[in-house]
Image (cartoon, rainbow, N blue to C red; front, side, top):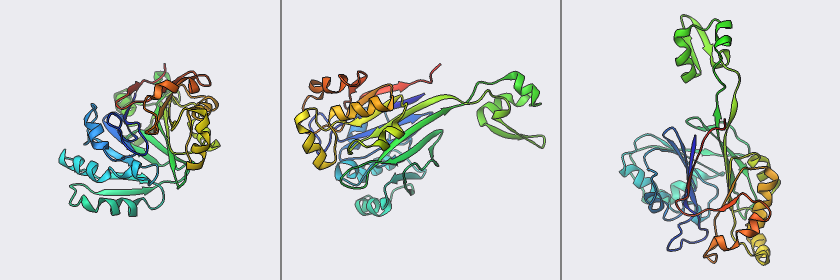
Length: 302
C-alpha cells in the first residue's frame, strides 16, 4: 500500500490555515517529501508523519514557495535523530541552489546527496517506490513526479517445482526477489505468475496543461494537480504566470484516465476552494479539493 498526506495546499504565500504546497508519500517505513516551502516543518508536525524516515526530497522547481522551507526542515530532521544520508532530487542546478539557501543550516548530522532529474529518468527509487520525474511548463524549469509502487506476481507452487526451486527457500525468495542457494542463483520470476498491477500517484503543480502531464499521469490511482483559480475568467492570468485553473486540471485528469484527482496550490485569493469544485467535477467527476492534512492509504487492487 501507498500512503499520501498533503502537508500544505497553498501557493505563493501561506494563509493562517493553509501552508505552502508540500506532500508526503510513504510505504513500508520509507518516506518521500515533495516540495518544501516555508512552514513545511510546521505543517508536518500537524500530521501523523515524521521527519526521520524521509529518505528523499523531490523539488519541483526553485520558486520560494516550493523550496524556502528546506533549511528549517533539514535541521528538524537532524534534531529528530536522522543520521542516514538524505537525497534531494530536482531540476538542473539543485545542488548549488540548496547549498546556497542552506548556509544557515550548518553541521547537519547526515550527508546530503543530490540528484539532477531529467524527463522520464527511471532509476530513482526510495525503497520499493519508483520515482519518475517529467518536464512540465512553467515560467522556470519545473518538474512533475510519478511515484510507482510495483507489485510482485502471485507465488506459483507448480512453477516453483518445475524450476526445481527448493521449498525451504520459497519464503525467503518471495521476500528478497533473488538469492543464491547451494551454488545456484534463484530469481522470483522462477516461482511467480508475473507482476500484478501496482499503485501509481502523480504530483504536478506550477504548470500549464501540456501533453507530457497526460503521458506520465496515465492510469494513476491518484493525480495531485494544481488549481490556482477556479473562475473561468481568470484563465488568462493563469496563462501569463504559467499556472492552471480547475477546469484545465480536470481535462488532464479525464484524458489521462486517472481514478481520482486532488486539487492543490490554491491562490491566496481562493479562500474556500470547494466553492468552485463544480468547475472541475462537471468535467471529471472524481475530483476532490485537497486540504492541509488530507490523507489516504491506497491499497493494491485485487
